[in-house]
Image 1 (cartoon, rainbow, N blue to C red):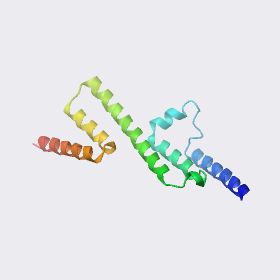
Image 2: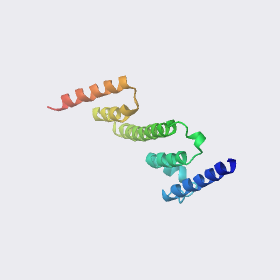
Image 3: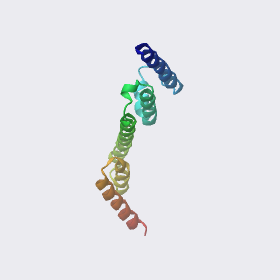
Image 4: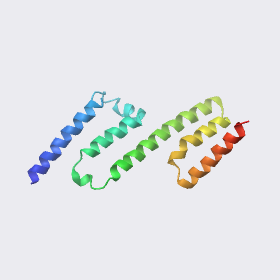
Length: 131
């Protein structure tokens, strides 16, 4: 049986490599790969999920790997959006719309209590701007 597990792990490695190549990760230049993955959180998340899916069964005992990958992808995407919005706001000056946009961006990563407060803020803003 140990030989069977080793062969299975090798086969899964080849399958993962094939899927990563199909995702065009294998065709990226080595110097730009990290930059390209950083610029596309979805691509990074899909690559990590592919690797996790084909990892040895001892690493897949719980389903928390995919949950952590999804959370990491969400955090990276939020960081990129927040960074873009803050840079734009710094160059053009802060306006009320910028603060509302930032609140919308950070809402998905906040704890439930803070999400509720952000929802209230957004509703108040909508009511004030409905005139």
